[in-house]
Image (tube, rainbow, N blue to C red; front, top):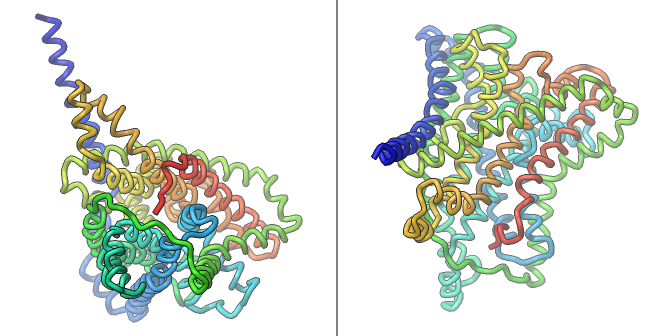
Length: 522
């Protein structure tokens, strides 16, 4: 009798433990996002709002930040749809490799993207030096960084178009253009809207690209916030600008959450297999691949070429500061990934059980690293420059990638698998360990790959929260770029190549370790 009561008590504790664990992401968001945002609100008042709004420079800055984000969203849409359609519908050698490599620009650190574009079109540009001091540098950087997001969104949307509909339209005499407008485009609309919202979020709240490519006249709100805090200690005006950023990204993030909910509810369909293109289609495919090359690969090639020509500047790899920065980058990434994995999986489990938690999945996407870092400094002054705060910020920016991919895959799991396991006597934990987690492994790997790349290249949070002895590769590169001299510039190029290879290594170990059966084929 006592033994049975102990078993019952242990069972109740076992049932309560998952609920306590699931509350972890909610408590984390409360401590790292909500409370710091409240601390920022206390720094502002009506006078600060009035001063900022009456300032013509601030109004122009807000307008330019919105304009470049909206323009970049439209530009990536116009470029991404035909490129993704060509890759999806036509068969060619190396197609699966292109589908994997197309995400490399997105996982590259923003500092790598910025340095690569400066190597192409900056004051010492390899191709043309006429873009210096113009808005085109930042727009090109936004396209480089976000075109893979749009291409991937369109690709996934096209894979949800039933082949039967396309065959039926073709039987009725519809042309390729008519099939796209009447059959494919209606299916693509949620994915296009989600992709544009995501691109707008990244461009509006971007920091690294705007800092390097905006120059003096085309910086964004994020850079202005950093300058107000770091150089002028003007917390009141910085708080007002932070609220502007949060309001804009909140609207875009909520729209993205809504449309992504619509786009992930699609059922498995019979997909149209890619076809071998005819002669004119081969030219169109070549044009699409050249567009990808020009928008997404050239900056990375420019970094590699500049590093090759660095000469004696390669000796920077022997410096103690370089090895310390490399060690810190790897150490912070690994520590943040452990926390991001725990937060991502528990948040996905919580969102899968309670629908209202899904909207919180995109909350970290709505707050930029600058806003988060500023809020943390105000809310927890006693934790300033602490390793705990830095790792929590890294994890906050990384774990939504895990949650998003795992939750999407979890929603599509057939209930019959779980029901069969329960019928055979499996407990909840056994179902999770032996049925659900193996099926979620490909999605988990994708999320981990994006999360790891985010941590490796994190720049804004490190600039705000780290100590001098915690210097990472990103801050060391920025130090060399900010120091005059050709040798410092070449050293920055060598370290940028090292950072690029490190990001590719983390991404490749996690993303490319999947078997061929787990690849996304369309």
